Length: 130
Image (cartoon, rainbow, N blue to C red; front, side, top):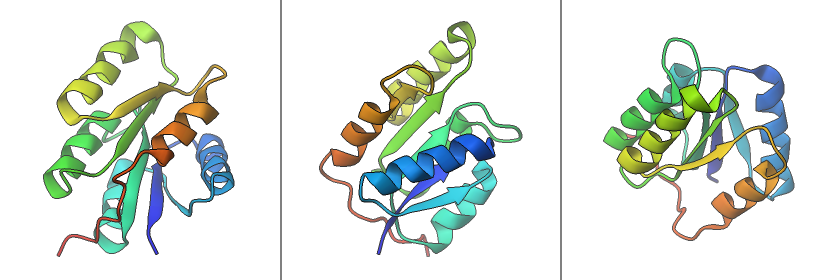
């Protein structure tokens, strides 16, 4: 059974995302950092990744680059709640360079963005890299 990998250094928001993913009928697995997310991706079947943009040590763009090197077609959703002046260009880079879907954490549309992202066709599980 494949899962949706959620990578966020904020434990409260990580829990919120997990519950939102469960409510959409999916199985979430959680990672508190990008490095932990990569370890999970290497050991468990995952069909999509939802990641925070701003994280210590390795940010969401670096994580996207690493995921694309291993699983070029892995669906990615990059989220941010930082100031637009800082995160806006990074989110656009994630979209243009890595083909990631993007969304803001704050505001009323996150639930709809998650539902649209998870409903897209072509999200078969990517098995762990050998």
